[in-house]
Length: 159
Image 1 (spheres, rainbow, N blue to C red):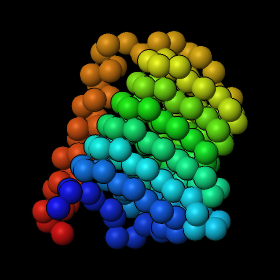
Image 2: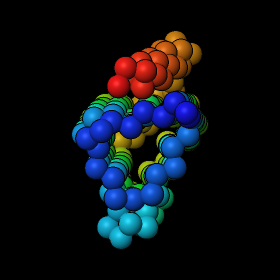
Image 3: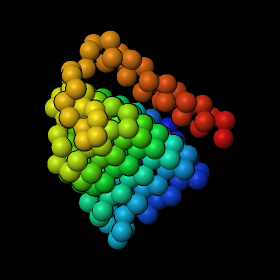
Image 4: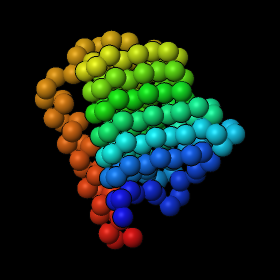
């Protein structure tokens, strides 16, 4: 198996392309108004509980080792680069770009067309530049992502 964990109670009515070691957690909703939208989930990335991804018939592309926190709402058309973190409770309006290693702070509101440059933290309502990600934080985010990879492996073995 590709070691992909998809919780049994999620709602899906769009295309999903999920890579190895990725996971989609409980009560998440991946939605498309016309079944045409696609969610691409890169290797080792996770979408945590109660998150809602509305493709709007477009694409939500999530790179490798990305953490999408609990209760996040994402509207397509979105690109999230490798090693990015979307903090819990955040909202990403359509056409946002989170570059590699970018971080969206918890409960932030990203207005349409907002771009988070590589390695920067955006936070607030509306989200704007806060500061650069520190090397300590990079390690910490990487640890968080690995925890979810391990969790999904345990779930797959035991269920």
